[in-house]
Amino acid sequence: MLKQVQHDPLLKNGVKVFLSFLVFSCIGCSNTPKSPVIHIGKIDQERSVKISGLDAAIIQDITRDSSGANWQGLIPVYKMPTDTEMKNYQPVQPGTYHIADGAVIFTPDTPFVSHQTYFIRYYKFDTGNKLTDFVGGHNRPGSLHYIDLTF
Image (tube, rainbow, N blue to C red):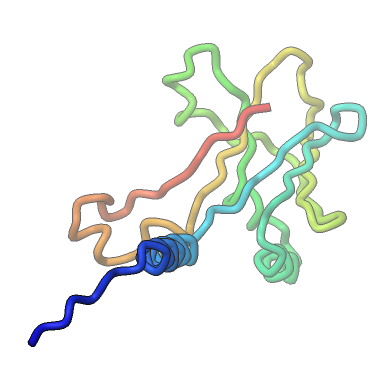
């Protein structure tokens, strides 16, 4: 003798809701690294540029170096040329870097020209350094990933 079992639609909907919640929870907890959000802006009557949003641990490590020249290699400032295709060939804007309130402050040796566009090249050292990126063709050996932030 077979006994027929009736399915409770409320129970069936509850299982669907639970499984949906479980799937969305797993997606929300994915382990994808987030790039820092870098903010730049002129300060001190447009004589300096404040670069904030960098990792505090990195700032502290580089600050321990007394020369201060490392900042120019990490976040150099350039003058934007009229022909933007030539921006990779621009000389670095000379100046000094110092730390204040958890941000890097760049003051050029010569004042910024008003109505002139400048850019900071921020190298994203946290991406593209895995062997699988080279094998998968996402990177070429020796290439650096960066973004140019204009001001």
